[in-house]
Length: 63
Image (tube, rainbow, N blue to C red):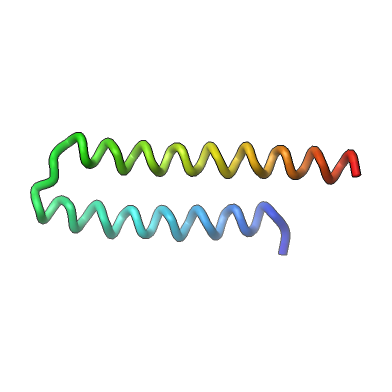
C-alpha cells in the first residue's frame, strides 16, 4: 500500500460520509449555507490531502 492509495481510500470514505450527511440534512431542510459548509469541508480535505501527498513524495525523492 502506498500514500496515494491511502489518500484515495480516505477521500472516498469522506465523500461517502458527506453524501450520507447531505441526504440527511436535505430531509431536515438544511439551509444552503449548511450545504455549502459541507462542500467547503470536502474541498478543503481534498486539497489538504493533495498538499500532504505532494510533500511526502518530494521528501521521499530527496531521501
